[in-house]
Structure formats: C-alpha cells, structure tokens
Length: 196
Image 1: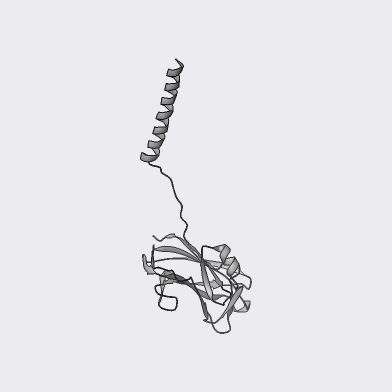
Image 2: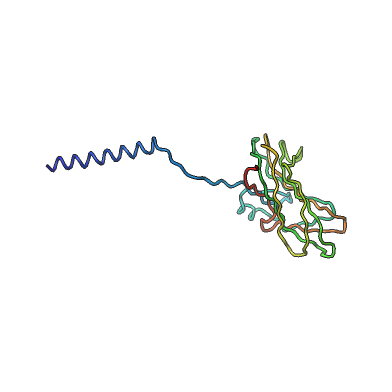
C-alpha cells in the first residue's frame, strides 16, 4: 500500500514537472514594455568643446565643465554627440527641446532664441540636417533663470546617421544678451517617441 501511494505521489510530481516544462516551452507569455527615447544633455567638456551626452546624466555631471554661456545678437553654440562607430537608422521622432536661459538686461525683454535639433551623416563638421520642424523660436522674458520648452516632430525615418546635434541661436540685435545655463541638465533634447 505504501509503495502504491509513493508511486502515485512520484507520478503526480513527475507530471507536474513535465507540465511546467511544456508550459514554458509552448506557452505564450504576454506583457507590456515601455521604452523611453534617449535624452541628450547639453554641456561643455574640459577641453572647451560643446557636447551632447546621451542618456547618462551621471557622466554628464562628472564631465560637464560648463556653467553658462552668453549669446549676443545672432550668435550661436552647437552641441554634438560623439560620432557613432557605425551608421544607424532612427525612427521618425517626436522631440522636446528644453533650454534654461535668462536675459542679462530685462529692459530689452522679450527676446528670442532659436532651438534646432538634427543629425549628421559623416562627421559633425560636414553636412548637418535639421530633423523635421525641429528649428523653432521661443521667447526669453525674464532676468531670472527659467526653463523653456517646445515640441517638434520629424518628417520621416532617418537613415545612415552618425550622430546628433543641438544648436541654440540668438535672434536679437547686438545689444541683446541672453545667458544659457549648462550646469543642471535642464538644457537638453529628449526623444518622446515616434511622431505620428
């Protein structure tokens, strides 16, 4: 009798183990995955180069030596990612551009900045291409630091890119000066997802 019970228990255990193995082999596991697009932090290296750090805020804090820069009139600064080892294709993105800035002389308010985000296909000193409508203007209205943002969209999938850039350009006369903050990671570009 004890042998029959032991055999029955062993059989049930064996069937359970085999069923569990078949479940993982033949079953369909479903779920949801949320993928966040990259964030590009604008800053300045110890060598004085304007750079975009991709996704790594900690590395940005360690390597960024920039505090702020000033733009008079129509001056500009362009931040570049490092050139990728291989060309990549990139989906049609929706992008949020942030800039943390202030007017140096409030009596000249409001003044404009132009924000532009795009890519390059060879090296940052060759041809650069704006992504979709990602070249837009915002107004700076205060002599205190404020973060302004705008959203833009690509116009199709991007092929064979080797890196990204972010340009901040003054849109005023020579007496207008705007300071742009690079210290806290608020001057950045963030891919929100796929543009519709």
